Length: 256
Image 1 (tube, rainbow, N blue to C red):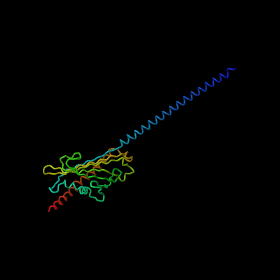
Image 2: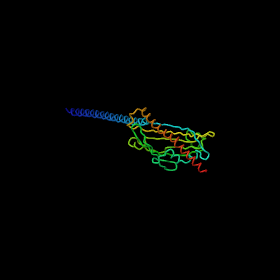
Image 3: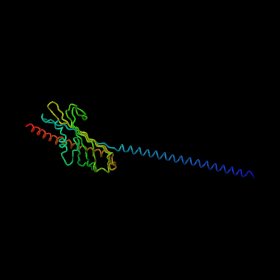
Image 4: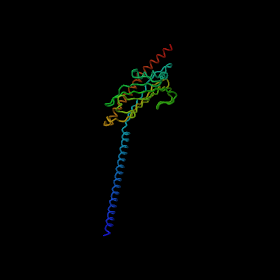
């Protein structure tokens, strides 16, 4: 009879130990399960972040258009086209005659409020800062300009804003590039006016355009850009040459 309390005590201790062991095992399994869930959640989160990044990169679209001009140029000894290009404000005014839409910022830069541009169902009013520089003696000529050319008018857009799309396209998600050159090319006694202009835009597609097929977007974008560069070409071939003729007459009257 005296042994029974000891046995009961031992049995109780064994049951308690078993209970403790079971609780420890459950705790380990619970912790492992929680860690697994955290790891799975982290993997999913990383995967989503990677997907978002990749989606953002692949969602960028680039469109470009290029024009070239090559027409006969009649120069006179006292009024060469090189002299005409030196008067950058005059050249700019010939290309952009609307004074209400432009202003001179300094000796080389002008701000232009362009006409509205419509792309599908979006409309924006670009404001660009354009820089004109004269380059000579083959130094830092734009690509494609022969080094023997005596003078080149280099055109570049250095800043821009898209009015009307502030809530759709962020400035960091849009890039506009314009590079142009205008120069006289001489062979013997013959001169030709040559020029080139490349317009490129890159932007992240806003959700309103994401569902439109890429081939449709590209066709519309190419049409818009081609219209812009063709407009510039018409101004060079028309307004600029007409103003150069006035310049020659003015120089001739100075000699009389």
